[in-house]
Length: 370
Image (cartoon, rainbow, N blue to C red; front, side, top):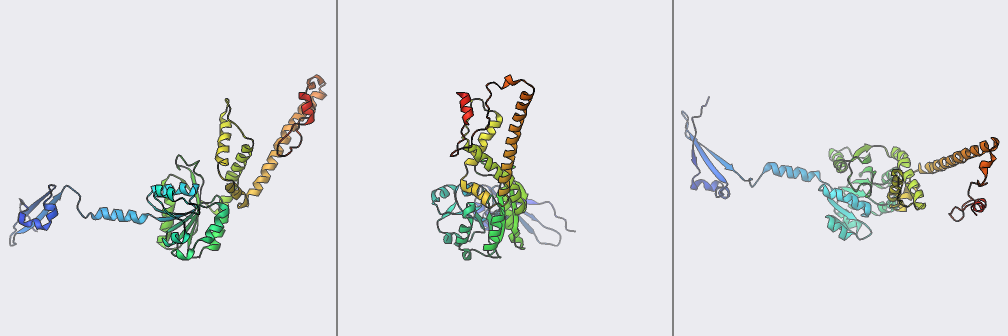
């Protein structure tokens, strides 16, 4: 066994500064040389260099930076309107490279966000994005998708949609996109208004419709989903068909009721209740969206028609219950012999059929008031 004697240091001589001249001349540098001699061996020297500052080549830091760079995606946002910009802000915030394409000129908005804007779809596809994210309206999705020069994209490009319906874009993607392309159908169950204070605990629904077997393609899909997971979304993996069944209730009914209340032109009052405030907020959240979105929820979700019919049946049933209860009260008053309670009571309580969209009081009701 080799036993080393006690080491005696000596400082780096000026003649040895050529070993690392830029460091040797630094005030933050000190170098110590240790010498020892063992039996039967010549003198050995260990040169120990101590640095207080970071080295010029930090392997660990470079590897960390390289790993982080590889974890980022180049994402093309097709449709850079209100919702496209809303999603792009999160992508930029998380360090991804974002490209944008839209028929309208959003170049100044994109520049302020740190997004490269393209007015020509060919130029966009020549950039070879790893992910193409469609943020178009439901009714324009097919036309936009068919207009993209898919031949200019790399094979296996990942296509993602964020539409409020899912079976329609799923069938469309499978029909139009080459089989080499990956498909991820998603729906952030929130928008610029409901998600303006953060996305924590807001549901994000997705279906991995067609993802290649290669590890790199599966990893790319997961990295895109991590964008929403990192923002705190509640990630829900669900088939497109199941999504549309639920959305017909949770979304279409909500928008329908909100727009019906909007037609009533409800106003805030000095005696608002919490429930009434909720209705006002519902009107604001639903009527603030475009009618195209609402129409798309109806037209492209086969379950929406059933919900319209159920709404009509429910409202008719409620009216019958109300007037039936009133009828029972009047009959009891008549057959109990207390006719005096009917004095001044209108003979006809149901208003006449509405004309031109406005309900009008019946003639009998007007006569009673006069």
